[in-house]
Image (cartoon, rainbow over all chains, first blue to last red; front, side):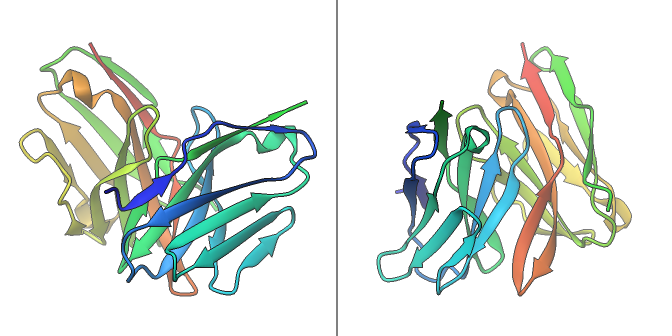
Length: 108
Length: 115
């Protein structure tokens, strides 16, 4: 079993709609969690950290469920510019593990 | 703040040849990472440095890959001899600690094609 697993997608989303997807992790001792965004042929960039209480950054909401060992990302009012691959990152005692990413395609 | 610098951006070599990549992290970032990203996959950690010491190189294929970080600043990653399966983007990242968590800043990457 992979340490960090994501649905590869693609999630095809009409502009203005909401999309949500999860990332599961296997190490229950993991401490910190992040979502990174990667555009085609570009480097990953930090989108947001994920806090235990859940957090929001504009149209993006991240949640952590420690009991079931997954994190989620929800994008509201999708824009064409949200089309990208979203990488889940799990930090276990300083060791950062990346998921393979979930591709989101926002269509007009 | 200047970002993470990497060079070259692109490299094409034949199998069994050697190649070297260079990375200059963000000033003041003590931790430096080299990741390999194969098309369609997430980044895979090759080696992590804390200043000029190695923290984790468990996934570095040491028979062909080597990396160093002299003086705790710049780093080079070398592959010798290259294999076809080494075709990938090699990403360098450095990190700062935000609220106790490691936040990575990546360079633009070095895209390697092995023929």
